Image 1 (cartoon, one colour):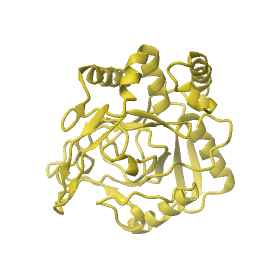
Image 2: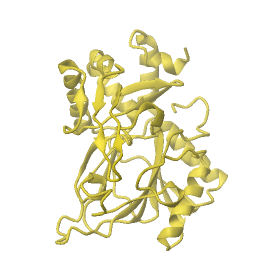
Image 3: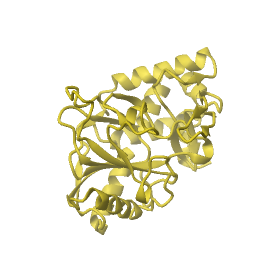
Image 4: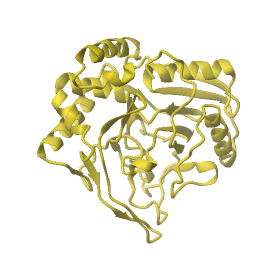
Length: 304
């Protein structure tokens, strides 16, 4: 068992405490995560890549600002895919809303396959990791969220590193961690799709370890979700309470055009935006690409 895997062994308190101390000492505090410059979005330099990878090592995510990018929204998608290619993110999800290069445009939409889904509305989104409803074979391990146009009002994102969430919960209740690591902890029921197909039922843990890395599959939603038993539901409620009350390692930002978040599927949420839009429309548009593999090239010996 690797040293990092031992830290997630509930019986190995010494390994956990050593890892915990290192993790908290190196993770950026609230408001301290830098915005890293990328001169040309599709062609990050070696020094730009190194800075982003170092930040991912410390926080599981990096915020970047592209200084030069195409004004053509269609071209931005190709540039964004070239950017993620530079970090070894080649295994993109075949999402039902994806266009060219696997890019999904997150904007207010009444399209049949998007209507009624919160990502395509102006509503707030609660804490979650992406693809929490996917089966194990389709686990989302990384994604990029890139701002094309920002909202007039609202649309803030908040981020908490999954490992910080794990630390908070384990410090409060190792028993809750054990319950949420159970393979049957959380079930998302099947869901009919607009094309007549059915997304199958997905059951799995909230926390699991893969190749020494902590992976999360989580949503704070209360509808269309079931927990294994009452004890597991209470464990999930405790986790949500801790997320809602995190301050030291909570990162809040409003993405502006050319800015984005590259991350290993970190916990995040979103505030509502443009509440006064009478028609329900909004100019806000973010591009998202989700991947089944993790960001490659993170420095050895770091937390990620």
